[in-house]
Length: 395
Image 1 (cartoon, rainbow, N blue to C red):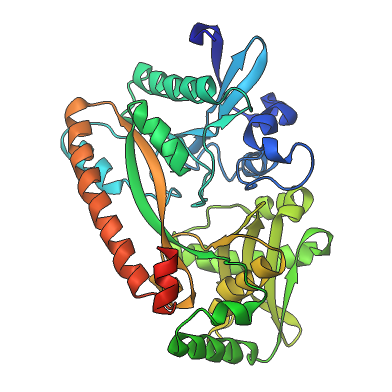
Image 2: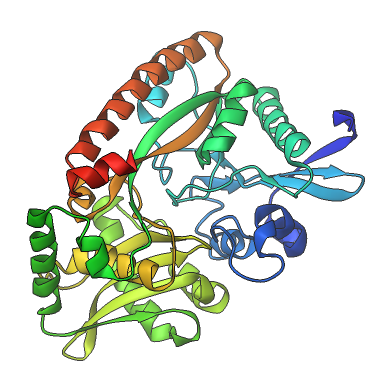
């Protein structure tokens, strides 16, 4: 097919894009029913961010959705945003911004292909089946040309898949490797089956943590789908505000987002709540993918020993085993996850830098960083909780 036949458009709101057309590119695996690989690039999730004003004017995330059309049909799309800061990205380029501006450049605005506030790996170049090659190429070329034509400093594609990273690098983008902690289901029948793979000391430690957490003086319940009620979101909003104020200064998501989650996203959600003396005191919000449970937010208004580990990590493992999910992604950072069975895993991003000299400096940085990340992953894996024979099998 002739690349010149493809029309690239930039759209300021998902209200201008048919949900069926977008999802045919974003989650074709779910078009016949069932779950998408992840819910984060679906029309319903991204539009909830937009409609709740979690993105848009004043947030640092201005929607610039990129679409590619061939013979009148949308064949590819990307969730792209003009960024006026580097908040809510989780693959950090603050040092790049400071260096660029110290050299007299203007780093912001930049373009970001990403799911806002969501450090979860997934497809970022959303392509209708049958158009993979030309669709991805059109999106990459379109995004770079847009950044270049507007004299922007850079384009960033964060938490893309490893396959996309390789393809983007082949098209001239710079690939970056980072790391998170993921739990992998190795066909466990139950939580005890998972514990059997751990060293004796770690196994005892987790059992002790779970026992202590569940003796906090209340009960723990999990909700999804129609079991979710507005009062559950009201409680979780209090937890989220507390965490957001401590971590980011102010919460990224607005209160309206959680109302829209109840309306549009409740089948994608697993909300684990702890109740004590008639009120909800802590909670963990997860999103459910086809093969992965994505841990996203945690918060509490009372402190109880080990309750964080129970709600965020162990209940997520319980759910993944019970529902045959392949993994749990526990979000950004947190080496404390290692002792709880979450091993380091690579995450990927792509970058285009306009200034050739700065691009060379970034390339050298990325090469050194990749070696350091790979070494750290090896070291952390070796220190993981699994019996040595199990670690060798994983490698």
